[in-house]
Image 1 (cartoon, rainbow, N blue to C red):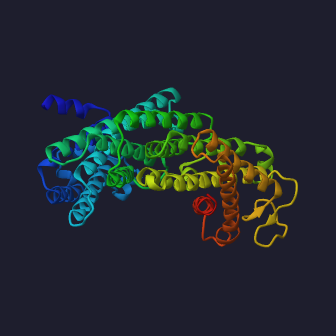
Image 2: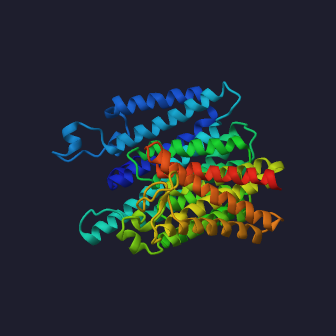
Image 3: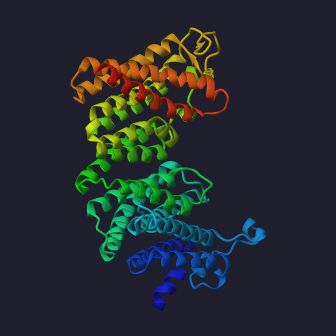
Amino acid sequence: MHVAFESIEKMEHEYRRQIIHAAFGLLIFAFPFFSTLTLMVMSLLLVIALGNFRDYLPVEKYLYKKPPPGSREMLTNGINEGIRSAQYLTLSLFILLLISLIHEYTSLSFPLYVVGGAMAISTFGSSAASFIRHRKKLQMARIANSPGKIEEHHLLPSSIVMLGVGIVSAYIAGAWIAGWGDVAVSRNLIFFVAVIGSITAALFESIPSEVDDNLSVPLGAGMAMWTFNAFGFSVPPTQMFIALVFSLVLGYLAYKTKIADLSALFGAALLGVLIIVFSEIFWFILLLTFFILGGAFTKYKYRYKKSIGLAQSDGGVRSYENVFSNSTAALVLAIFYGIYPQYAELIIFAYLGTVATATGDTLASEIGTTAHSQPIMITTLKHVQAGVDGAVTVLGEFAAILGAMVIGILAVIFGMVDNAFMVILITTAGGFFGTNVDSLLGATLQKRGLLSNSGVNFVATFAGAAISGILYLLLV
């Protein structure tokens, strides 16, 4: 044992810190043998110890790297990153256990195997990713003879490692806690929430944020796992694995073709897995059609749009914000389809309406801005400058109809609904009117600063779903 500690002490600081970080995850395997209250009190005491008595902790010298003389941390007496990360990780555990304890006194449940799974992802998965990332950083530093900054494309391998290690460790931890704790839960459900939690963790880690990953990752993964655990819905691991691989491959292709960034890759993967599992693979392909068309037409006459100041930033690369603002309604409807099969046809039409709205709105914006005619304001019908929120063009309106119609035609080809004419009619109408709801919101709420562009897209896609759903009830 003494030799092992000596070996750890001689390691490069970041590697040493990540070993301690991963070792913290071993505490998860004690969960079944203590009450939630006891675990919560223990985690609180550890938070206090790390904040006030860290000099006396045996792991302090492995976590702490003395700041160089004159550095900001030395001058401000700020705590080192290693200690800070340990504090945040322990605080995350305390918060999750507190939520679990509160739910013991309600009709809801936040089981310990979910808490354990989230912490496994945040320790084993995160440490494995940090090893890969730090190794790449050292390699780049040797090549460039300077520390350098890791570009986003270098982060993808570490994120994939985090995803894989996270799934395996979360499943093992969940199965261990449920098994020894005599919790009646299927292994399929444990695997299902392990996959959802791991994708969510990779997503949160890929999003640039001032919030420490040791807070955002475990809390984000834990809440996502809890949400889908509450549904009690699961599929065989083989089906889940196929959905995951399919979603990741398509997300990767979007990433490589510069349609999506890393956060959008994992955002789309999360959407893909959930939509495929709760509905059918064709539902996800329809949503992908929106992303593909949106990405393609973003680059349509890009130089011209850039010259007049109306081009998408970052070369039209989509982020997680764009993914979720346009796809949350689709995700909700796909989940409803799996939970409420008695309303299947209504939900299908609503789903087609929301995807048609997202597609129609994107094409209207990207194609409409290239029109040579002066746009008009949707609320006043007066001529305005191109790019003004709420401005529409005849070309943009035709593009919206075309985009929505494509979704309806694909739905017919995929055999989602029998009545081809009604499918195309209702989908096109829902997409067209949903797109104009987007323009109306842009001219009113967005113009007043009450909604952002993402907020407008979010509301408009729900409006498109509602319009198509109402038309289905009236016409079919």
